[in-house]
Image (cartoon, rainbow, N blue to C red; front, side, top):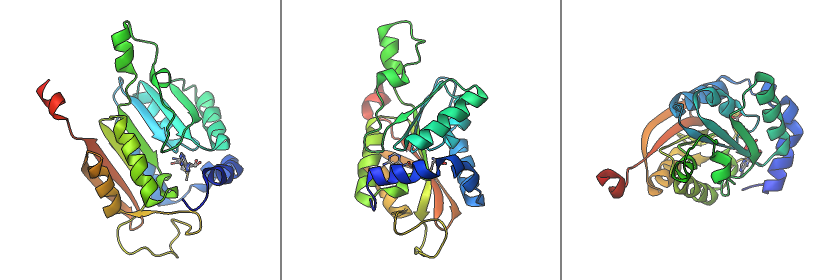
Length: 227
Ligand SMILES: C[S@@+](CC[C@H](N)C(=O)[O-])C[C@H]1O[C@@H](n2cnc3c(N)ncnc32)[C@H](O)[C@@H]1O
């Protein structure tokens, strides 16, 4: 990570009120719509959005999901997300502090109160789908590996990662990242990290030679297979 968590958080809190207006590139919009498309939650699904920012992905998915947990390090960005949710009357979202390598998600966060038995409560604590858009590139390769393992340990059935990522030779003069603060990985590195963590890649979408969406599904374990 080229900046500390605190520095990244302060940087995003400063721009939070103008963040949505500033995200006007075709590539960003394409990435958002691909992440939303591939996340494809069902009404019973709990979704975790890591690096949720002002909630673009979380709020787009909430109407189709049971519950959405948005996690970010920037209180300013989270405040914008909460305001937007209130403005449109979306109540099945919870925006709070959490980071890639410590998402701060527990049973209370994802329990929606609808279970009738303790066993159903435990089932409801699961995270079914994890999404992240334009956020993981702040982590170094090693930190991304750790973050992907943390996501895998939550045992979602799907992880949809939209981000700055290199399909070819990176060109630092291109507009999609700032070398002084960002640390994008190659698609090959991310694919390896995802498969090493037990995911199977089911789609790779290139939006631009430096922007893409990876869809990773959890390979069923032997136990699940034989249940
Ligand atoms: C470019 S914004 C993207 C926000 C949103 N996902 C979107 O698509 O508009 C990146 C976000 O990642 C957050 N972020 C950066 N490092 C993070 C970390 N280690 N854990 C969680 N969030 C992080 C920032 O605070 C910021 O809100």
